[in-house]
Image 1: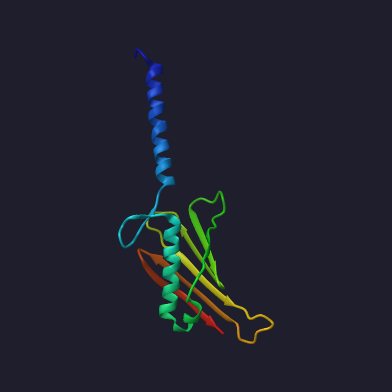
Image 2 (image 1 turned 30 degrees about the horizontal axis):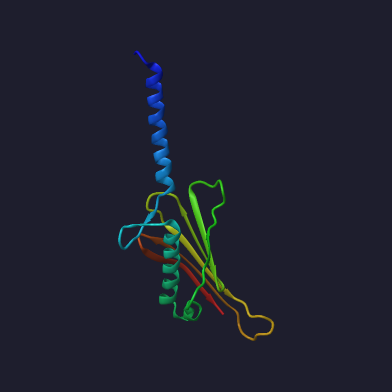
Length: 151
């Protein structure tokens, strides 16, 4: 070998380029859009799951209809920094708290909790409501695992 330093430099550049490429691919990864198969940004994908869960609740539990009319959602990723292997997203709107949790694996099962609580103020007369729904989302399908409606 006439140029061992040159060979070492080339090997290091190849390794660096490979690592940088993998890091870039992971940082720009998107979940697929279930209808079209096109990539969808992560936050939009979680919003789609959230909205599908609320639609499921409204469609399958008519008594919740008055609480599922319109939303102004706030929230997003709530995974603590440094936690690897799992993600949590939390959204709030008009008495609703929706939590989406999943393990970071290929084609995960998303656990969803939708919790609604309506408290009456001291000036109002009425009975408070509570909805607690749990389910999963996988491959575009919502499956209910628990439901409670209290008035």
